[in-house]
Length: 321
Image 1 (cartoon, rainbow, N blue to C red):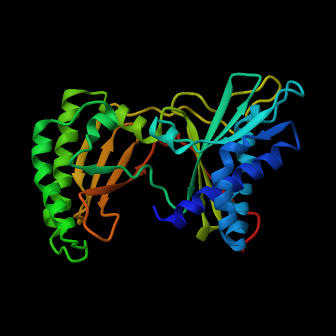
Image 2 (image 1 turned 90 degrees about the horizontal axis):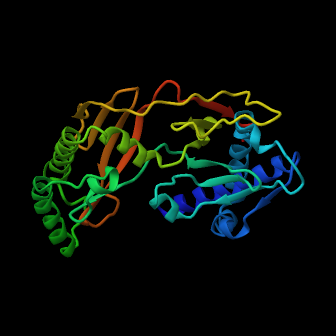
Image 3 (image 1 turned 180 degrees about the vertical axis):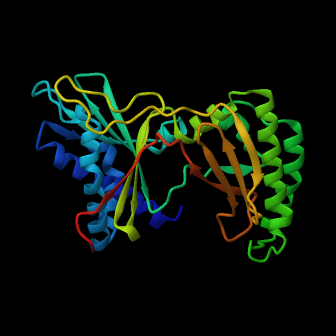
């Protein structure tokens, strides 16, 4: 991720917590965890006024939907019953919590989280290298010797080319000599793991979507829309209050328990497609993330299909720019 993309993403987080604070304060006590938002506030101050305006519009657009799905945000028991807003650390994502913004009530055991995306829909940008055991990291089953035997010569060659300061642009055979053999090794290792452990599909989705249910909030600037998507996989979202019920109902979605097929995407030399049951499907596009060749490549992992009961609401911005 470039510094500009990182700054814009953090600025979006800041705009969201400030707009949430403003809206919630009209109904009940609310506070910001100031220490947690410091980095996002700096990013906010670094972006242009025009960008700030877009981020505010994107943040305002989905808040009504959030309140309708989560009445516990506004329902207040006492003056000391405060909603706390905070922003997760990057290390939380490493530990399996993909949520960026947390809303928490201090007097009851309740919290929800938002995952914020700015003009992209990637689930993760995981890496492959000669040292990364993706099987152990993603779903708890280490990669086998045959996998390491296939990928090690590829990354050894990339190490040599890095020392020669070769660029990816100059490497004319990268698809045939790097992308395709790595994807085939990745595909075969996934198939082997699934044959050995039938819980792999569920664990894979849990790796990509984290250990806590959440709402994904995606600002799509070109469409002047904020997508509000509900990942209620464990029934942690959409709780009724004592006096108010949710007016947007979020069903619990089933995790997959079967791999239907894994294939190279038709007419592609850099993407694997994975089809699971219960409506789940994913694409894994491998790519270099630098100018100079390096012995590590990134996946752009995206959901190309989710269960029909994972609700997506398109929230129009209040006004066009």
